[in-house]
Length: 625
Image (cartoon, rainbow, N blue to C red; front, side, top):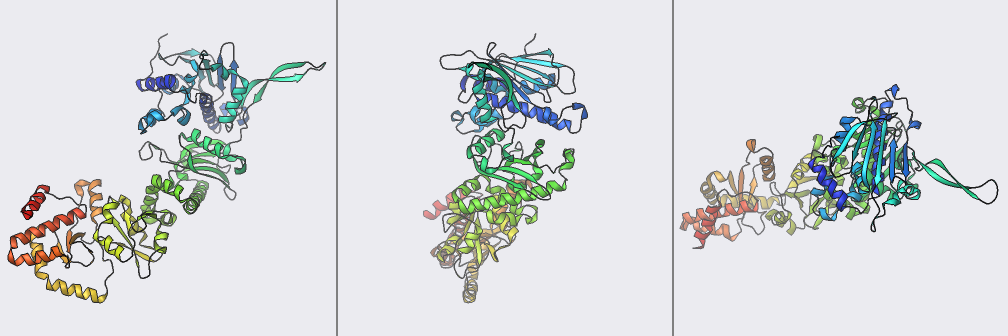
């Protein structure tokens, strides 16, 4: 019989598993049982609309058989089964689930045990087995197939016999060595313990023929007999009362079900009784999955109806701003025969989704109030989603998200909420000030920020692209308007000060005109400002769009990007501006150089590109000489 070869990437990861990673090899049984449960799920779902299945929920089971003489462990199910093509596709390609990409994506991959912490499915059997045989018959087909592999030189596949649909996984254990005792997995107590530890929540009975002892009818002798026993409780963890579930059980379920190597940050386990009743077990991850910001990430909750899985990733149960949540929802009120296409339009599903959104928001608010460090860990990973949720759909979700947002406070030197910012505003402050840029250290040195700080006012430093859209969406917060300190009037001047600035502008009109003509198309206008603190000059944009918005648009669509007009603001009290004014009459050419130098400096402070850096360098040298 011709032997088929594994695909190259399959061979690499398989070699890694068999030869290098043995730390948690006991999970092989968990993985095989989970696959069997999934196969039964699929046939149980088919049975909802196909009377030919001929099985009720009570008929489904997983059976474990140990044979010490042949050193085999067999896990059998009466699930959907596989045909020849599915065997080749599912058993001939490892890392299809992303395990290899997961390991490669980690910064310290060599320190991570992907077996014990991530789960690698069927191929984990080769950690303990020298060979694996799979006999399977697909529901609806008459032919069974046998797949055999030793995990090294590929596999064979041929026709076989099986009386009914389902799959047998037959694992021949490796010989024992001084370091490794593989025979332990043939012991009843070991199997019983592993199922209790890893698979107690499986909803189908896991059965095994176990040894029993009883006193003989006559005398004191003890006789031994065997009987088939169900080893798991079959009560899904989400159906159990919270008081009956330990933190370790929650964590273990999360890691195994959602393939995360880290503990969840928060567990949300609740039930709702009413017009639509359901149980939910939700998790907020401790960090973003490696593929979270890629198209490969599949958001949504697993949806069950009376313990039967309807959908693996039901996106309609989660709003986009909470798409990081993982978990399970189980409702007996969902129609079992509803199609997946119709499910998204189901009124009951909408009610469940609203309840889940409300609960998640409440739990995040509690985390923010009671565990600030934990919340900031969460926010580092997923805060951007809350920001996009605030501005999406024309602000439809802003009331859900706005009090969960954090922004870096220049005054406090740490992230604060909008509520905390407003509560700390000194008397007389009427605006929520912010500036936008890529680097908070650079933003902190802006002249407008220094001016506001000198008055005791705080400034929020926005460093995400989406940040600048938030004030435009919220408009106000607790009746306080937002003010972009780098582009808008700070509102600090009294009427007398405004009149004094206007008079000063008239007095220095000649210089303003001179600078504008010297700079030509580089600026739209030149004007005086008293908001620059100790700085000589700065750039502000024309009304309508900020410089950060300009940069964002250029990144998104360079071909149609628009450059906002630059306005050069000068500080009339600064010595450099006074020097320019004095030089206009004695050396106009040098005064033009001064004007250009101030323009270069303003561009640098605004984090805007200098079109000709060489000219800037030459100008510095020229003025130095």
